[in-house]
Length: 199
Image 1 (cartoon, rainbow, N blue to C red):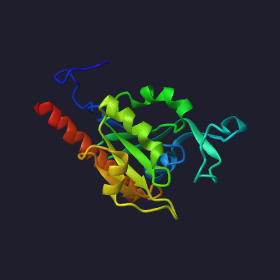
Image 2 (cartoon, one colour; image 1 turned 90 degrees about the horizontal axis):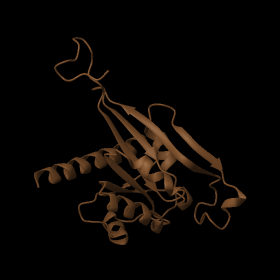
Image 3 (cartoon, rainbow, N blue to C red; image 1 turned 90 degrees about the vertical axis):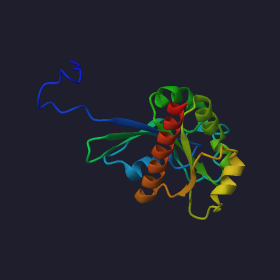
Image 4 (cartoon, rainbow, N blue to C red; image 1 turned 60 degrees about the vertical axis):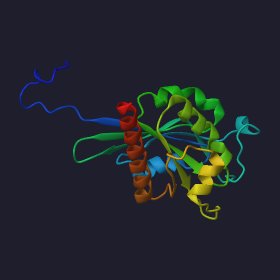
């Protein structure tokens, strides 16, 4: 049963505020790792072993040691002391699974485009997707061991994203680093929503 604000029975707690953030990026960028690093519950993962069907289809350059791939989504959850809940949905990276993105993106407050600096071109499709949907997003450059380290301004120029889009470095394995990325994504989304409301 749905109650209006004045009809809610005494003592019945209000429903929690639920927020959804999408984690996108190219194949092997670290999306599954990022969700796992911050989720308070064991993340739901839909990883399968790479197979012969992907040979010649999936570009494994610079990620030759990767043996699995997300075929549906990753899912994680964070609950705050206030009762608010943040859901994280990681998208599959390969083009053949992009048909799922519209369902995963529905109702998302914001998105994180996880960029692998060894393969920056792989995140162009994610950026284009969120720009077309007008979904606020940040770009997080995942720092892999031994990968080139670039200034965020250079990454912004290379990806040709708008000046108001936050671009920051992160380590998808480290909880504090992931937390900073998620905070930046929510702050950017709120700024965008407030600016739109004032128009």
